[in-house]
Image (tube, rainbow, N blue to C red; front, side):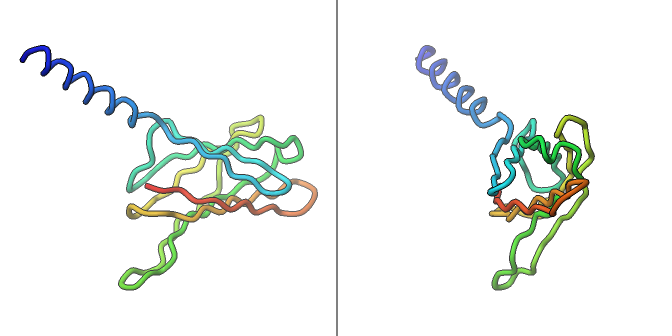
Length: 126
């Protein structure tokens, strides 16, 4: 009986650790690729999302992030927008507020010093 209890506890711990990892997702357009990540899983409330732009052309760009959930019956439109802080070498940090669980649309706006503004669309689930 003790052995069965130990095995059960190890299985629960293993599943817990598997889901305690961070968040990572790739968002891509025809001209840019952005890796969104977080040290911990995204949750309802304030979250810090790290952005890594994998295109030399946009390494010194201005980046902003908009996350939103469209209006649905009985629920209003929700949005959180922020300007990302440059950490250098194409890496950025953005703080967003996800007001509830569900699928959030993500728009990443990259404005290079010279050239056209780029919008990359993706989504995240919490």
